Length: 80
View 1 (cartoon, rainbow, N blue to C red):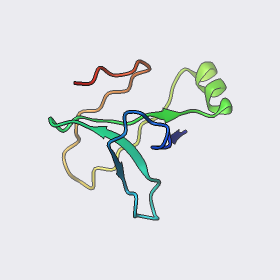
View 2: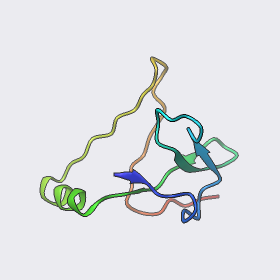
View 3: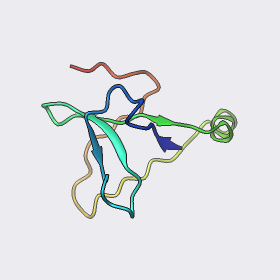
View 4: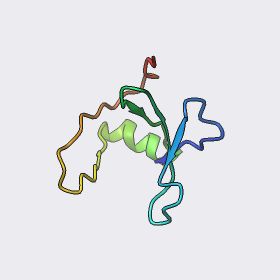
C-alpha cells in the first residue's frame, strides 16, 4: 500500500515528510478546520489479500500524544 503521487492526486494541497528521508512523502488535502485527507493505492497482491482476508491494519505513530480521530473509507470524502 502506498500513498498516491501528489502530481496525480487532485486533492493534495500539502506533502508531509517531503524532506524527511526516513519517511515516505505523504500527499494530503488539509482544510481550514484541520481535517487531513490522504489517498492510498493497493497493489494487486494487496487487493486479493484484502478480498480474501477481509481485514487490514492501521498503525498510527502518536509519539505518546493523544490519539486523534481517524476514519477509513472506500468512498471519496466530501470536502468543503
